[in-house]
Length: 302
Image (cartoon, rainbow, N blue to C red):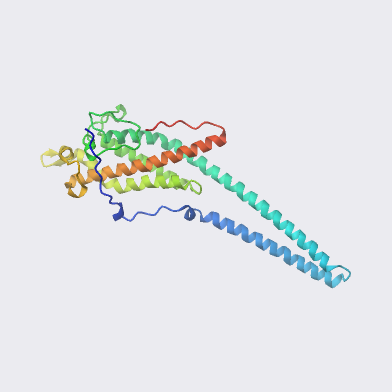
């Protein structure tokens, strides 16, 4: 029987999140550089006009036989020609620099993604084990999974992967979701994101979701070794998950179950952010491969 999805309360509005910088706010250095170039261009034109004016005065004073009107016409024609040439060259140079910076940013993202991608794979497997009951098949690389709090009942059981040496599922999930948090943080810190700001926003969504849910996750992981009187805490929580009504709410849940609800919400938020990241980074790698004449790597996610 397919259980309906239990909507966890959204607590993010109670905590003031750091605002994600807009693309306009992210690149003041580029605006300053363009303004500086424009000022230099204007000052250069003014200097040329001033020089022509001074030369005209000198000619007028010492060479009475010179036709000043013709001199001024000729000089102004030269200034206008120079002005148009400078503007055209400046536009071409700015366009070339923009393409070069976009290419450099894209290649930096592709390099970082080569490190991030294996961590995403390891995270997805552990995340999907946590949200899947023992009697169901784990969809290892499913990004957005429809699951309820009740589907997390077996998260304290041993991992199915040999490499995890039978550690609890929730424990290895906690490890790899933090590893992915670190990789996304490095990505945001190292790349300017003047051209691919949406990818930065997706990474920040994952970072924020992980940061807000960290305390609840630590509490749930701690249930594995804690005791509630004479009973293991994880057994108490497992029973509470099993007895939780299908339309259960965060506000009505026992204290220990509140952390499970918060963990449920954190995983949902991570999935949304990761789905955005994978879609955007696939577009970026395809763009990079197209420009470089290569073929983008195939990514097989559900």
